[in-house]
Length: 236
Image 1 (cartoon, rainbow, N blue to C red):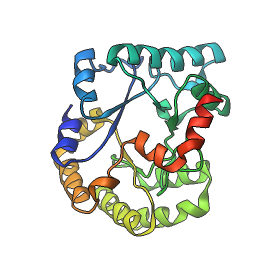
Image 2 (image 1 turned 180 degrees about the vertical axis):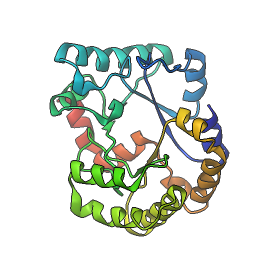
Image 3 (image 1 turned 45 degrees about the vertical axis):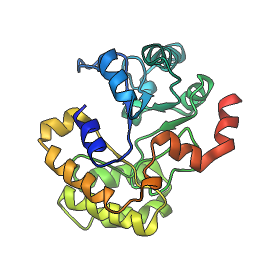
C-alpha cells in the first residue's frame, strides 16, 4: 500500500502481481486491501502459493497458474489478464500453460531491456529496485540472451557502483534509446532497505520526464506492443 501511495502521489501507473498465499511465510494482502488497490492500479497473478514453476510437475504447475487466477478474480470480481513468473523460474511448457489459462501477457525477470520484448508471454524488465552487485547483472545478461539489444544498458550499469545512480542512469538512457522502461521490486525489500525516500524521489524524477499518455500499466504496454497478436495468442 505504501508503494501504491507513492505511485499515486506522482501520477504514475503500476501493476501489482500478488499470490493468494506465500509458501515462504510472508504475509499476503487481504481481500479488502486488494479491492482498495484495484480501484487505482492493475492487479496481476503471481501463482497461488508463490512456487517457482520450474520446480513443479505439470499437474501442480497448472494448479498454481489456474487456481491463482481463479481465486484472485473471485476476490476482485474482475478479470485478471497479467501473470508474473515467481523468481523468473519457468520452462517453455509453463509459458504454454499460462497462455492456456487465459492470461494475455506475462512478465519474466530478464533485465536490462528497454522494450516490451518479442512476445507477450515473456516480457522482460529493465531493472529491479534493489542494490544488486554488478556481477548479478552480468550473470543475468549472459544467461538470458538477447545480448545485442541489452549490451548498451549493461555497459551503463557497469559504470557505477552506486545502485541509485545506476537507476537514474538507466532511466535517462531509456528515455534516449529505448521504447520502454520497466522498474520492478518487492515492497518488503524496500521496507527492509529503508529506501522509501529514494523511491519517492525517483518517482518524482520520472513523473517530471514522462508524459501522462506514456505512463502505462503492464497490460496497457502489452496491448500497445502486441495488439491483435496478443488476443490471438490468448484465444489459441
